[in-house]
Image (cartoon, rainbow, N blue to C red; front, side):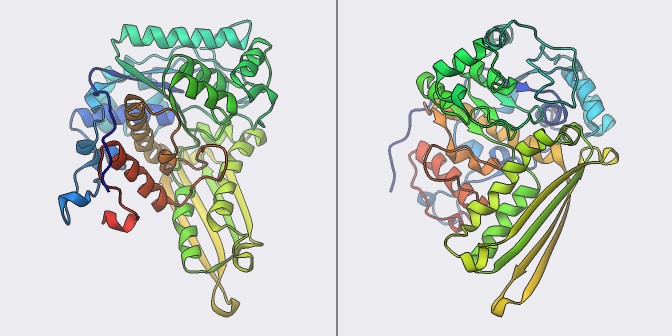
Length: 437
């Protein structure tokens, strides 16, 4: 059944994209967009640029590209800026990250990358213990730091003649923090920032500043950040969309495909062991047990929600799930994710699945970041606010409204995303993912 089309402001003018962090992921996103704009590369992995959407009313087999169906900003409208505690330009960062080939993919856009110099960051080594930086803001209180970030946002928008902005967290994983009294309301959060409460990490300062300025905020890390009542209250009050958390790019992406297969066929699970080796800055940060705990929590939660042990305890009531991440510098950004999955079938006979995913962390994350920026800008122009559950497709631990639990099945997430796009455009929704074919 068709619905009325949602009013969406046009995607005119320049869209500023501010990344928190200018490391491997951010520099790869920026470089990729610059290369694609010049026709040097293709946007492989980007749903907004390459995926189609099935429209029932157009007849069998008719499906436009998503970017032709919904009014997304074009890549030539994007203007990039960043904060980082390390003062390297996007050019220097891309070289140091070692993700892209210097002569094929960095030097052709060197001038554009060199123009992006990071603003001083809100950075505290207590939250990311294995990093150091000298390009750092100072302030007597965390509230002062938040106001400094707000000024940066306004200044960047004005100096770059941007019509709209989106902010995306591409920085390192902070230490694990439980939600507490400081996060219960905007009033409590502001008081906590005034008191320099240790339960308010830098990521929350950025998110608070963004939401106060009416700018959509995306959390690409597993940290708490916007997943607290204070932030959802602020997002609702100011009419700003938020989404997160933790880009679903590699090993967990495979889990959200394989685990639904087991459940669909009623195959039992005895154990799932996942290990990773990587040598980039993310791997170094995750050597700290408290930062790893943040990442572990998002990785471990996936199977519990997908398999619903309470419904089939004889199949999933007692499985062992272990996740390990090991920093191994020779690998750089080229991560290896290895899974050993012990399953059982008819009459309880054991079987195994082994997966060895030799992936490139930032190459997988970059198109996700681009899609999220474009979709969150769309959400803002469509008047959507608060948690954007329809973007769960992109996250390991999708932020969701209170009550219930997040959806983790990749293909249900894909169907939900496309149905939200259909709803926005007044098109008939399609009930299941199979209809996308």
